[in-house]
Figure: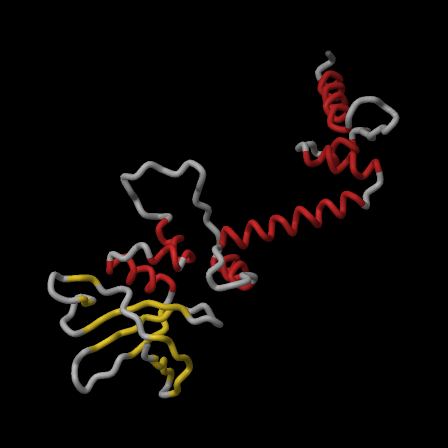
Length: 208
């Protein structure tokens, strides 16, 4: 398969293999919409940048390629009707999240809004260009959970109990200010001791 150079300021900065995976059949020929012209999409291995490949059958013209943004790559896929390419380029699926549709919602998924800065940080920790943001977040969650387990393992009995109380949603700082102290000698669990303390504080405040 022929190679197509990518130029910047007259200098070759990358080279991709020609393809026309965005073409469609118009009843007579495969085309991107203009006679004798073709369109393909690929991705650079090292940088992860998307590239549109412009093919031509016209004499005197050469195939060319251009680096484009992720949104431009997504629009090219949708315009061509080849939405199956979103399986090959899963990062582009996020542009689907804001689309209205008559399809039943997938209750197992939801949409979250993050800043561009956070998106860039997530992109920096990808292990491969094809890795999705969901994969990155899941991997970071595993790292965080393992680190948390290690920290908890090194805690004293009282520290573990206080961690459990805070994780249950109690304001441990305010409770300590009111006189709370976890007692490991009691049979009640840390959370139960916190609940009982709060009940006593509420009763005292209301003269129950």
